[in-house]
Structures are given as C-alpha cells and as structure tokens.
Image (tube, rainbow, N blue to C red; front, top):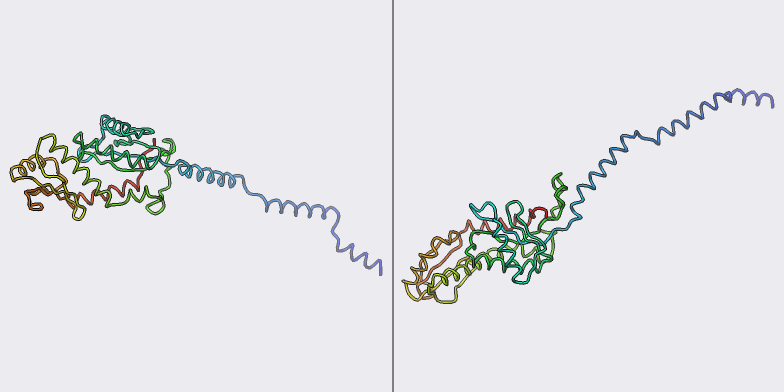
Length: 279
C-alpha cells in the first residue's frame, strides 16, 4: 500500500527540471503584470508638468489699477496723458507702484483697493481740468502680474467671473449706476471748468440726475443760456443738448444718449471680464 501511494505521488509529481521551469514562468508572468512600458510613465509625467505650468498664472495675484483708454480716434494713449495721470495721483498723495502704456492703454497700478478708488477720482478731475474729460475712459481694473513669457505660451489666470472676484471692490466695479454717475459727474465738472474759463455766468448749483441721466443748467436770462449753448454744443457729443426752462429759469438740459449709457455699461463689464495685460 505504501509503495502504491508512493508510485501515485511519483506519477503526479513533475520532474525536478520542469518544476523549476514552471516556477520561473510564474514569477515572470507576475513581473509582466506589475510593469508598464516606459513611454506610459513619460506621458503621465508630461501631462502633470503641463498642467502645473498652465495653472501657474493663478499664483500671481493681479494688481489694483486705474486703466485709461482712448475714445474714438484716440486709439493709443500718448505718454503725456500717462504722465498727467501719474502726477495727479502723486500730487493727491497716492503713489503708484508702477505705470506704463500696455496694449495702447495707460495702466497705473496701486498697492491696494482703497488707494486705487481714491486715485481714480483725482485722475478724473485732472483730466476734466485739462479738457480731456470726454476723450478718455478712466476705469478701475485688475492688472495682470503673470510673467510675459508665461502669457506668450498661452498661460492666463483663471477668470473668477462676477460672482467669485469678491469684495466691495468688485461690487463697485460692476455697479452700473456708479459707472453712469461717474461719467455724469465728470462732465458736470467739465461744464464748470469751461464756463469759468469762458467767463460765462450761470445759476448754481448745476443739477445732475440719474433717472433720467442728465445735467440741468440754469441761467439768468436767455442771452446767457444761448452763449452757454454755443460753447457746449461741440464739447458734449455724448449728450443731446436742448434749451429748456429749468425750474422757471432759462436753461440747458444735457441728456446722456441711450447708446452712450449702453457703452458705459458694456465697457465696465468687459473691463472686469478681461483684466489688463502683464506688468
């Protein structure tokens, strides 16, 4: 019986050489299952590197900036206009961190939101005094700090959109009522400057309203009103100018045209969706 079992076991067992060969095949097969061609690792590495490269612009937070762009034929902002803006901000105590002409627009950068907002007002007033009030758009913006070489290969900061850029700063930027009010206030100041330079008499105060968007000017008599109209007619292309009675006095009403209101709103939105170029 013992010999029979031994024979049976011997019959079932593989020869020593074959046992070694079978074990080697098993280990080789396991090794093949746990390995990949080198090119697959290279593909994964390249994808990770490219993803990191094109995500890198998000590591560069934008600067708070005042951006000045020309209207109509003013395709490129000249250097002297940039200097005027710099000097106006500096004289008011708001030192820019940098300024330059970028893509035909003047971009003046500031260290924080509060400085940016206050500097914009003084820059606008300076432009009105110099007679540039209706030649340039002076807007708040976020200026890119992404290195030029990174933008040249298509790397751009993720646009957070209207709901994610956050804070009072962004709410002010997209407030259409504020944008229209600022434009009206700028022209109101320009009217005062023009009348003062031309020594024209008018009754104070000049009234500015948002609903409807218009500027109302009163005069002592029709002669003063007509003189004022003659001076303004070529300076207020964005308004419909008409001679009317204002609060019982001879007056002029400057109504901001509806297409200009739309332009102001569209421009304000576009400035938030497309930040200025790299510094």
